[in-house]
Image (cartoon, rainbow, N blue to C red):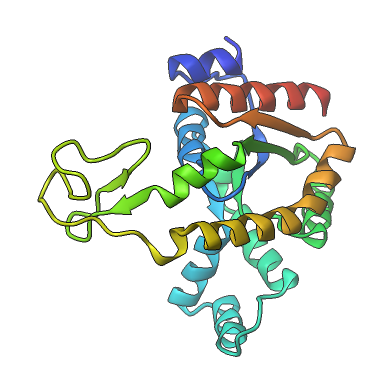
Length: 239
C-alpha cells in the first residue's frame, strides 16, 4: 500500500518512513489540523518550538531559565538556544521514524543547523518541507470570520460555519460570540506580511535543493492530508 493510499483509508503504511518533515503555511491555512492528521497516520510526533519553549520555561530547565531571562528583557530567543531545545527533543525515542516540525526552522541559520545535525547522523533522512497554500481572500475569511464562545469555547466562522440558531450567538448556550483582537483584517494583513518575509529565505533554501513541495489547502481535511502525504512520498523518492 502506498503512503497516499493509507492517507485516504486511515491506515498506516508499515513500510514507509516519513522522516523529518517541515510543515509550512501562513496563519490560518490549517497547519495544526493537518499536523494532527499526519500524527494519527504515521504515529510520529508533532514538535512545536513554541510548545518546547513554554515547556522548558514551565519546568525551569537550564534552557528554560535562559529563555525566560531573555524574554523578560523583551528580546527574541536566539537561534542557538532554540536549536538546543530542538536537539534535546529530537533525542527522544519517539522521533526515530520521523517527526513534524512546527515553527522550525524559521531562519536560514536554523535550517543549516538542522541539516548539519541530520547529515551527522548516518541513518537519518534529510528534512523535507511541504507548504500548505490557500489564497489570500480565503485566508481572510478563515481568520477574520472566526468567532469564539466565551463560555464553552466553541469556535464558529460567520462565513464558513455560522451559528444555526441565532446569528452572533452560540448554538450550545446562547451566549454572544466574540472576535479575538488579532483576528481583524488589519492585524491579519500584517501577520501574513511578516510570515512571508520571514519564511521566504527558508522556502527558497529547500526549493533550491529540491526538498520542497506545495499542496492546495482549500478543500476537505482528508483531501488536503492525502495531498501532503503524496508530496512527502514523492520528495522521499527524490531525496
